[in-house]
Length: 146
Image (cartoon, rainbow, N blue to C red; front, side, top):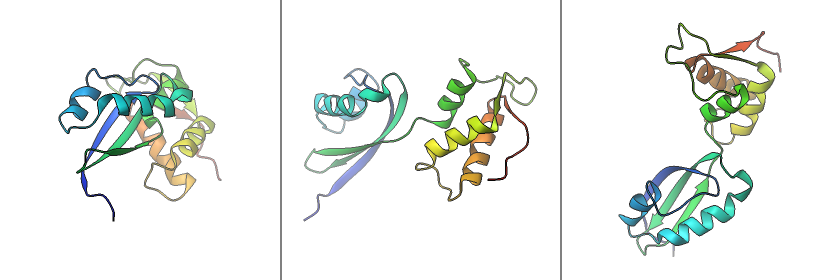
């Protein structure tokens, strides 16, 4: 028989750096989940992505056990890495802070495709380009025909 799901917790944690301090400790402790067990498992699974912010969805059950799914880094974080910026523009409609190419947008879209709610690479690329636009990052050139 399947376990009864008690709820979901969504967190963003740096890869390989989960520890019992906030935000992890309070979020899991209030639900009665073993914090150290989660930290050990998460750090073991995310060693190769150390330092990158990774969204994680934790499903916890009525018997206090849990499972979790680690997702790909957010598009905004990947755009900041691609453009080598610390943060986006405070006024993205007036002040542009960087430029990226459609090739970089394509790489980010291919990486993030599993977590996006679209079916084609073109629509994923337009979603990534829209995020870039809202951060004050311009995309150079014409949209490529794929």
